Length: 539
Image (tube, rainbow, N blue to C red; front, side, top):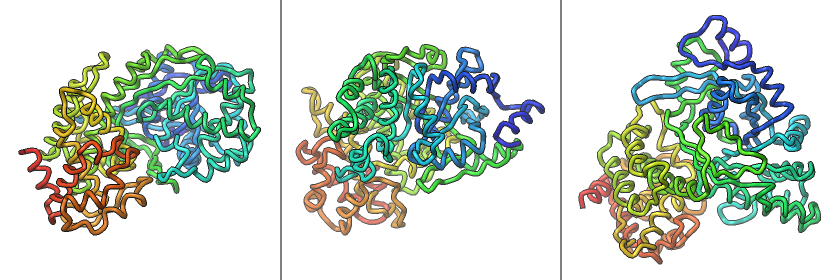
């Protein structure tokens, strides 16, 4: 059996047990979607496959929705070419539960996949057509935080973006340039309203999307490609909204152990591919059971209220921000990054195995419960302590979740400020708290500098995970062995001061000294990282 239209017929004919199947007329759904699309999503990666696509399938199965999802990709089009289209836009979502049970769902809610690239004329024309449709309520995104960036790690405008500034909406090549050009198509179609919904795991994600689109549009106005009325359209919340959202579901790369389960069921052609852009995709996605998606209720073309039936929560911006800060800045992401950095240094290859490491469990509990909770704002729709309890006791220890510290360590320089900076600033802003009392967050910062050396605690070299600032920060960590904390602070001062990395100037707020003392300790030979963590927990 293969994951495509023909394979699904076999599933239905032989009533393959253990699989949840689409229970809707896909051809009718395709037809309705073609004529009156409601939702287009950019970014056909694992989080989309495991979360949004499954949510829509559930609604289709319950006859609460008659249209499916359209997915597009403007950066790594190989995902569409090598995974979506050969499999007729089907995939298997595998939910791995802590109790060892596995749910397997053949997902068919994605009914069209398109390459956002002008060299594919028909697909690009179809995308323009979709954006000209009055029925389109939202365009959503899971393209990672750096997908919205128009500059590189040095603050220089990216080459493709610079070309888009110069050439206008008819010659776009950057991701954000192409998205802005599609929005311009919608503007030209009687300035139709739409919600542009970032669902990426970053703070104030809607603002990041809006800022990128605004910047490009203003350059186009400056260069005579568009009128100011297009700028007014983007800025009119009754026409174009950029809601904030908070998403949470762990979706690691496709894992061989999950592939083995499916192969034993008789499923064929399940090989994971790594595209030339570095994306890992397969005809299946493995994910945890826990999931949250909370979206600001700002939909100028009508809120898709039906999504609440799939567990998606609509609320006000203030509550979204509180939930996002709770999760990203206290209750999950800082703990994840801690396990990522120290997992790589201590030789771990699975997050779940790290949860058997008493030092690391002790450290993330200190960061979450002790340092984080005092400054977290309770969003009311979920309890912060309960959230951490679930993370520490159920989600991270799940042995069936094949997530790795190496994957989580990707782009750490882009995450430190978001994941720890809010807590640091919270201590600075509270009269009853002293930022100098923080000891475990500075330990993570020191661990990151030690990580950048690319040598683990046993003295073995390892490959650093991808990060746009590696070429900028790695030169500072060369030849640090034997240096005292004061010397380390002087050597590392340009990085320690960088608010783009840490959200604060660590020297200015007084934490640099502690960071460098920890780092000095971590540089004292093999086993020094473990010893430093252990002593910090006992002190």
